[in-house]
Length: 176
Image 1 (spheres, helix red, strand yellow):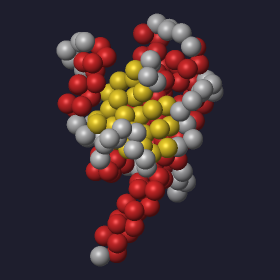
Image 2 (cartoon, helix red, strand yellow; image 1 turned 45 degrees about the vertical axis):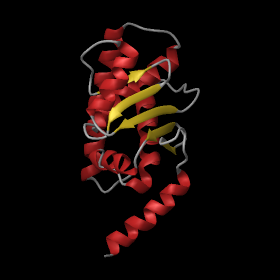
Image 3 (cartoon, one colour; image 1 turned 45 degrees about the horizontal axis):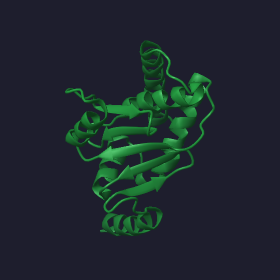
Image 4 (cartoon, helix red, strand yellow; image 1 turned 90 degrees about the vertical axis):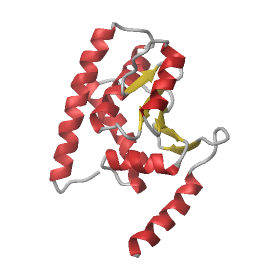
């Protein structure tokens, strides 16, 4: 019973921090990120799959951006990184086809022209988000396209570092 009451109170409080961008799209802001979603269930699923509590989600994702920048030594970030959450892989697929025109889409991707990470709340993991954040940080830092192989190597490196850091946090007493 207490959990249901806390969840209802949290949902009401969360509604004060979200606003409509389009007819059905909502937002949650952090200092360095802007999370866009259509339904609160998608945000809850995203939070669960990332093993991050809803009440601190924007703070934790902001910290992930800071850690990514620290690992890469690239601290320039002109504006917030947008993270577009879709309810399933079909939403990511549709966005990929609109932008890329290729048939097979990845589970998540970063589109530099809109400075947006597109991902599914069902298939998201810490490593995937860190990987896509790396593409954003690198693109913002250099302001021009650098070789894809170079960005992929750096993204995979940051992905591994972020996974090990999150694992450390999970099993240590230190929390964000």
